[in-house]
Image (cartoon, rainbow, N blue to C red):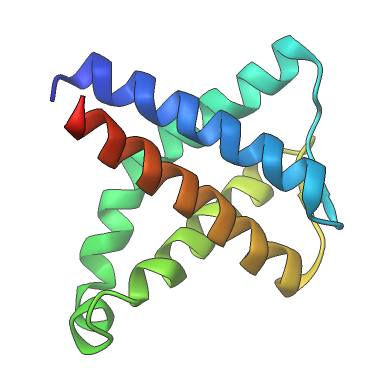
Length: 118
């Protein structure tokens, strides 16, 4: 898969995941105005594309010990970094962070697999 296609799919998946998390998870506040939402989604996509691989390498022993379930911890850490770096995004509490992590991760997984099929 090419870089542009991968980034585009990540952008769409992150956008859908963030929108669903904002709509259904109490404690998650993300601006829904089009330009602000696109900017926030772009920032999450950049974090996922550049910083997430570094975090995955650092947490590789945990990933091996948990047979891949440590990826949920990595996704939560990425969302926590995202929340820290972007002042317009607020995720209040660990429960909201955990649910948002599951939503964004699930949407990313579905869109990534459907892109491979198509």
